[in-house]
Image (cartoon, rainbow, N blue to C red; front, side, top):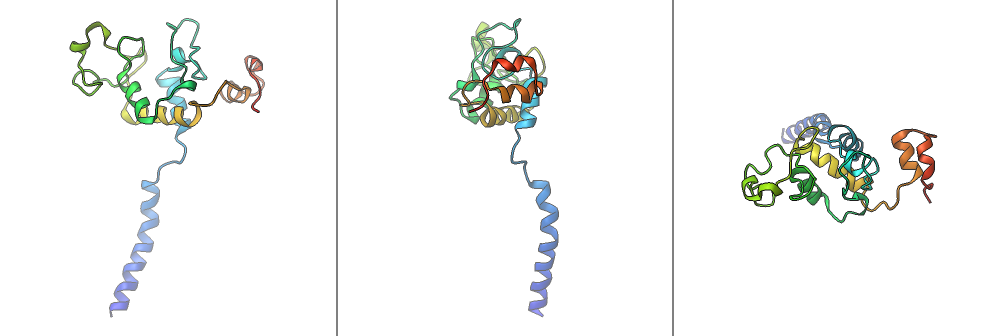
Length: 169
C-alpha cells in the first residue's frame, strides 16, 4: 500500500513539475528587451548615443557618460536609471523618485535645484529599468570601441554609416 502511495506521489510530481517550470523560468538573455527600451521607450540613445559611447544625438545637451567605459555594476546602474544623477542632466525614470528618501537618501526639497528632472520621454517600471541595466552589463559595459558589427546590428547590414567603424577582431 505504501509503495502505491509513493508511486502515485512521484507520478503526480513528475506530471506537475513540467507544467510549473516554464511559468517560473526566466530568459537567459534579457538584452534584446533592454536594448529596445534603451533605444525606444527610455530614449537613452538621445544623450548616450546608439552605441552608449556618450556621443548622443547632435541636438542633445551633451556631456552624457560613455557607458562603454562605466565601472557601475547592475545594482548601481538600476539606481542611476531610477534616481538620475543630482546636479546633472541625467533624469530619474522612477516616477516617485525624491518624493521620499528612496534615492540617495534625500528628497527633492532637500536637493533643491540639483534634483534630477523627469525624463523627456516617459518613466519606467522597475522591471524595465532592470532590463536596461541587464542590457548594458551584457552588451555595452567593457566592450571597448564601437565595431562595425554592432553598428550593423542596429542599422542593418551594409549601412553606409557603419563603414567608419572597424570590424571586430
